[in-house]
Structures are given as structure tokens and as C-alpha cells.
Length: 195
Image 1: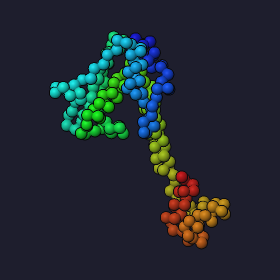
Image 2: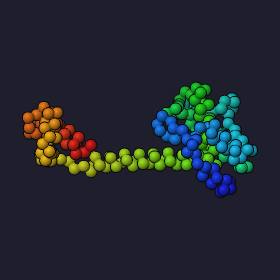
Image 3: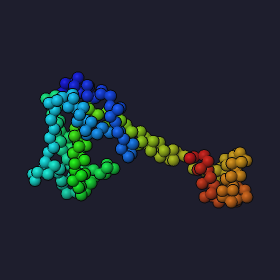
Image 4: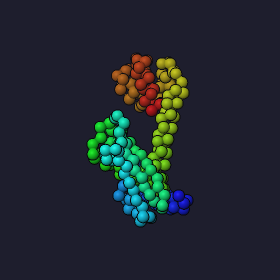
């Protein structure tokens, strides 16, 4: 594929075409992707592969997927996609609507291989990496948090301003911090200093 064809499709400003799913992930609708592709290459064609029985999906036990092929700028690219529900979970017993929806998703993903909308997949992967990094950081914070004894936590809690101390004692129905159980001290310490 010519580099300029790929770059022209990749660099299209898609902001006005982007839609969001229920998770807030950005996507390009199949109709918009098809329209833009046809504007860029009116000779573009696509094919939905069928199994030996003529059905537009393939199955191996409870695993189901669809496969498409697009010819654009005189070159072809193929794409496969597992049959998923609207929450992006694999479907073990797909219905015809799920098959059709996934064929259209597969076509959009197939067009991304030519550059159209590929940036959305890159952003999605970046969001997943960022979310994973945040999870790792939170886990490291929990692991790195020094183990504090009840006395050390009480020592730190006694430095609280009087109004916060009174609210904390009221919450635990204690007259003073030394009447609080170890679990109550841990809970207070967590809420005030860690979360």
C-alpha cells in the first residue's frame, strides 16, 4: 500500500464523526467509515466470508468469529473479529443480530488496517495501558505502605485538628481515641491518611 494513501486515511480529522459507547470508548460507525472510504476510493469493495454452509460466521465449539476482506487502492486486507455482545464480551451462542453487528464492526476494523480510524484503536490501547498503570501503581502503593501498629496509627491520629478528632470519635462512638478498637483505628487511619 502506498504510504501516502495510508497517511491520508490515518490523518483524516474524525472528531465530528466520533461516537461513544456506554463505556465512553470512542468509535466510528460502520456507515460513516464506509462513506469516507468510498469518498477516498470509489472502487473500494468488501467481502464477508462465509463458512461451508454459507453462514457469515465461523464456529469452533463455543468460539465464534466473523471475517471480512476489503479491497482498497488496488490492495486487499483481511480482518477477523470474535462475535461479541455490546459490552465487548465473547458470545457463546450468538443470535443473528450479534452476527450482523460484528460483521459491521469487523469491516470498520478492516478499514482501520488501511489507516481509516486506526488512531481510535491506538487511543483505546493507550487508555487500557494507562488504566493498567494506575492499577499497578495502586497495588504498589498498598504493598509499599509500611505496616503500622495500633500505637503508631494512634500517634498520627492524635495530631488531627480538634474538629476532625471530634467527628472521628463521634463516628466510632468513643469518648477518646484509646477506647477505639484496633479495627476502628485502622479504618480511621485508612480513611484519613490513605484514601
